[in-house]
Length: 124
Image (cartoon, rainbow, N blue to C red; front, side, top):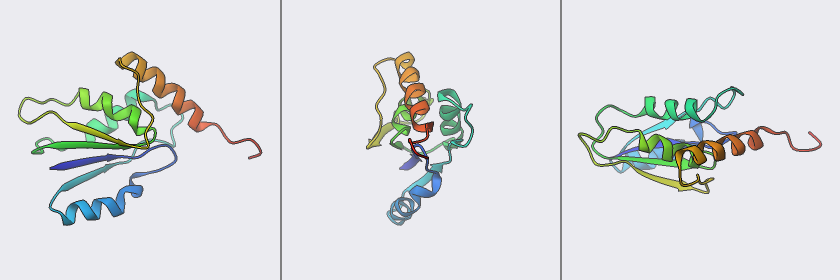
């Protein structure tokens, strides 16, 4: 099984290091995606593209795990993974923002959540 791990706002692929080590000790393959959080112009499409580019071409089975803001990214990415030669990807979220029922609502939710996550707290 191949786990694609997607971080949330203000994080990076590094936040999955300990989990990756555990999964790999258990015989699983992992990829931790590094989203372009430092690019204020990157939005839902760019985030989804980064996830899709990180997926190996022929994993046996695929599980996408998203934390926080990635909960809005991985459902869109999972819906775009070609499934002709393997089972449908599973997506799991941990303390994640969840999308609306349609892709358009997901993008809207993503954009709103992303903008809110980029605001500086008062007094900073």
